[in-house]
Length: 190
Image 1 (spheres, rainbow, N blue to C red):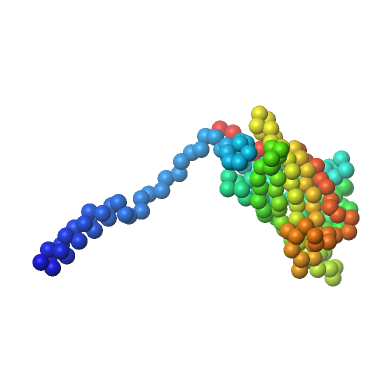
Image 2: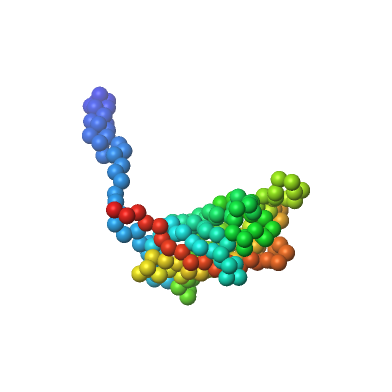
């Protein structure tokens, strides 16, 4: 009797194996990368955008942002290597040695996209200053027809020991810095 039970169990396992084993994963093409975010009934094309950034109407550089369908936000900037070789309007910043930014984005009730992005700032090699944290708060709109964005972001810096998400923490002198930007979606032609 125990041989019969053992055989039955082995037979069931053998027949079930094709259904339990991992199958080959195949990539599927996505024709429309529109992301629909529930809550405010908005459509937005996730992806990568190249921005022109301005401070007080003067061009300060380029920024590349990527918004993912799950709400993540990534940013890099043409000025993050230091003050040499950057546009004149960007040369007066106290520190242009910072990391890429990472954060999150969402739609707000007025149909704008808002994002909070964090990065770290490093002092110049000859400086005795400390590393600081920074928070950039974005507000912008997306034009679905032209695949463009337009808006602003504010940058605040914080002592590294402080929480940059705490709205009551003091920020650096003269802050926030408020930038405006325009940009377009990066696409691949066929």
